[in-house]
Structure formats: C-alpha cells, structure tokens
Image (cartoon, rainbow, N blue to C red):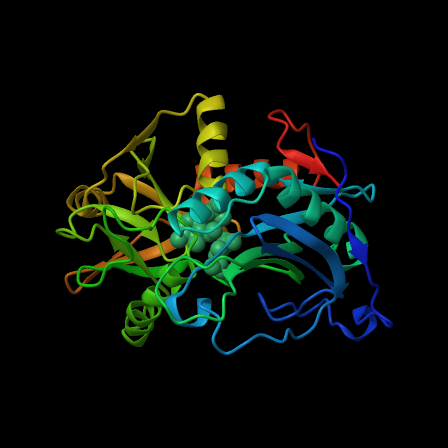
Amino acid sequence: MTDTLDIKITKAAKSRLEETDFSHLPFGKIFSDHMFVADYEDGEWKNFEILPYGNMSLSPAISVLHYGQAFFEGLKAYRHDNGNVSLFRPYKNAERFNKSAVRLCAPELPEDIFVQSIAALVDIDRDWIPTAEHHSLYIRPFMFSTDPYLGVQPSKTYKYVVLTGPVGAYFAKPLKVKFETYYSRASEGGFGFAKAAGNYAGSLLPAQEAMKEGFDQLIWTDAKDHAHIEELGAANIMFVINGTLITPSTKDSILKGVTRDSVLTLARHWGMPVEERLVSVAEVVDALKNGQLTEAFGVGTAATIAPIASIGHEGQLYSLPDITKAEFSNKTLKALNEIRYGKGPDEFSWNYAV
Ligand code: PLP
Ligand code: COI
C-alpha cells in the first residue's frame, strides 16, 4: 500500500439519502451523494477530489465523444451484519482497468490509487450501502479522454471518475436466451478482453433484436464462425454438464471476469471437476437434448449468478431443469454471499475492509 491518497473533499450541502426509496432500487439509476474525480495531465495523475455527485462541464470537442477512448470497471461494496463494510477483490478490478487502459492507449492508474479512491468514496457514502439481502453498493470507476482535438490520435489528457449507487438484483428472473449466430461482440485481435465502452455500444442492437424475438439476453459466439461460445450478455457463462463445470477459456474476445475467477476457485476448492476450454455450440445443444446439461448461468458483478431457464437455437427452444434444482449455482451464490456479507470465513482473503 502506498501512502494514503491526498484527496480534497467537498461534502454535499444536503444528503439525498432521505428522499431515496431503498425498497425500489433499479440498477444504475440512483447515485450516492458524492463522486471521485482525478485528472491526467502533463504525464501524471493529479487533482484527487471527492465532491458532490453532479454534472460536469466538458468541451464538445473532447476526443472520447468522437473516437471513444473510454473504459470502465464494476465492483461492489457490501455491508456486514456487524456494520463492517468490504469491497470484493478490488485489486482484480484495478488490474483489469489497466489492461483496458493499455489496449485503449490511455494512461495506467496505479492500483493503489484505484483502490484508495474507491475506499475513500465508499467510506464517505457508507450510509448508502443497502442492508437488504442480495443488495449492495455498485461502484463504477471509469476513465475517458479529454483532449479537445479532432485528430485521430491518443489523447494526452484524461479524467478518472468513480460513481456509486445502491442496487438490488440486476436480473429479475431466470433468463430466456439464444445463441447469437450473426452479430459478434468482439473478435481476435480486437478488444473484447477490455472493459471498453465501445464493446457495449456494439452489443446494443443485437440485444435489442434478441429482445424483439422474446429473449432476455443473448449468448455471444466467436466472430469467425459462430461455432464456439464466448459470453452471456454482459457476463461470463458457465455450464454444468455431467457434473463437470465447463466455461470458455479466456482470450482476446472474452472479458476475464472477477466473478468467473471466484466461482472457478470455489468449484476447484470443493473438488468439482472444472474445464476451461473451447466450448462448442454443438456440444451444448447436444447436452441440452440428451439431458446431460443440468445448469447454465451467467456470472458477473451486476449479474451475480444469473440462472438460464431456456436456450433458443435454430428455431428450437430448449428448457433447462428447474432452477431450484440447480445445486451448484445455488451453492455457489450462497457461498459467495457468505463471504461478501461477512457471514462466513473469508478463506481466500477476497474482502477488502473499508
Ligand atoms: N463479461 C462482460 C462483457 C461484462 O460486462 C462483465 C461484467 O463486468 C463480465 C463479463 C463479468 O465480469 P466481472 O465478474 O468482473 O464483473
Ligand atoms: C458489471 O457487472 O459490472 C458490468 O459491467 C455489467 C454492466 C455493464 C451492467
């Protein structure tokens, strides 16, 4: 840990907590009282500031609006029964933030600055962390380029900002999904492994079309021939086939999820057979047809463990066994929550105390 960050703090004149309905927390619409902001100028990070959440004044010429040098992270803070607050594996997000920065030609942010900025912000707004089961404070750190210049080149200036907001479940029910066999999210040599804003922009139309067909989400397949499975919407994907946990191995076109890593670690710890490898659409469809596929689910920070109820492919809809029988995913969600909410031992030292 480096020295504590020197942060200029301006508190909100009045908290918005009292006017916030904690019994209704739509994802990503409610923001806590404060935000963290820093600038990258003259080759260094400076102006560390926590200030009231609010609008920013920016030139319409800033390069991010034209060429999209923008990327983000997503992590959560949890409140324990004894009042303690913890972040879940924030250094993993710090590491991935810098992988995104390198790929998008933006400056890296020292990992300790990333984690300390978040810890300081969460500490100031700790009363915003919900207490209800499965609820948490979602944290959105992001970076974008700010040179007011229309030439296509890496910007020399950037802003790093962190927002937080209380959230409940991202998905309301088990998902009806389909394999996407025309569009692709990312390709080899591209930047699917980065949490780049552009990856999400490109995913909107395919997702909208899938929704028009009655699906909740789509399963991304490889850009070359759509024969292999990559991700599920904005989450990684896992299957239990014949008692083995199977997930696509990570590569250029797949985001290396923190939840994915945590679930694989727990499964291995429990002695469950785990395979990280190429997973073909054909084998999953076969396993669906012959009943060997017992569970399929998305794993991600916002999604947590998101069970799949049915999968569409080539005009057929295949139903999965009832989610209440999904032994592995239910056990995993319970185990992750016990750690995150401080209800059980933190065997892998995943919690970072705020
Ligand atoms: N894949 C994509 C495209 C995502 O947006 C996310 C969400 O962050 C994930 C996977 C899961 O990553 P994590 O578990 O780190 O949240
Ligand atoms: C997250 O889980 O943090 C994500 O990034 C998903 C988000 C795009 C809603």
